[in-house]
Length: 332
Ligand SMILES: [Zn+2]
Image 1 (cartoon, rainbow, N blue to C red):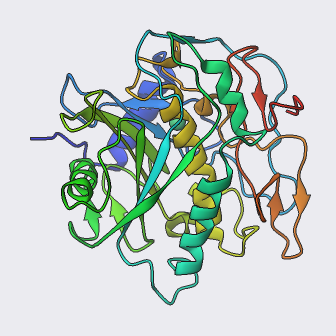
Image 2: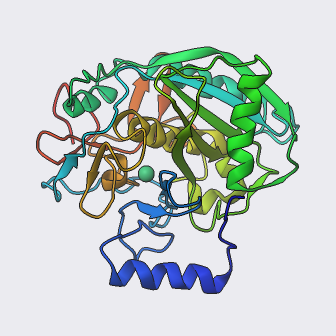
């Protein structure tokens, strides 16, 4: 019953042309395109849009990565929908995360867990507090859901958008994960899995929501992010990661992007979006700020959370419509 666009060169070209001629600008897989998010109707009318996080428009750097501008961008505004005050991030490890390829590994899983355990309350994530509105007080905190699901390849290795929704619902129905009205459910796929609506070609991740009777607010918010090792030049900013796993280190920035977008626009686009449909992280995508450091393995990182270094894109402040890497110290 779900309608999924078939990704062909023609479709991709049409999307580019559409983007150049309408107000809905994607941040693209080529440098010629803008850095905005793109709403894309993966689902039937009446369902919220999927909002995609497009691929890296910049050539991968070997030293200083794209810092990004420091001026004010076009304003983002609130559209009177629900917000999440403190999200709980749940992970569904789809595929095989115990492969001998150096990226789809238990050590890779631990990078994600450590990130989700430490990003909440950070100087980075606190920029989301500027989105408190409509009686919702966004805390800038994040809870990591300690429950996880590992469904294997329950829908094979070539997934549709509808499959992603089913994977989330299955994880709750099986009792592996709770039905949580503050939940953000991440389907993280191992690098041998494709998402056929355009992982690696159109986007690196996306988030959306659907109606759901089992949560107290009637909504289920979820996100797809694939292991960036599948297309390291499109979905990661560098080919070596600060935690020694370029694919998962690349995923972290996409997970951060989708998490803060879901926090501030959980049911696209009823929360915070600009007039083009871009959410907060879309407006700062693939820019990494002025404070970058080089790890001993040559990877660039721009923040330390807990015991790990990460390279994570900046995020927009709703206060001044500028991109920040550290809201507390106002570092752009
Ligand atoms: Zn986005």
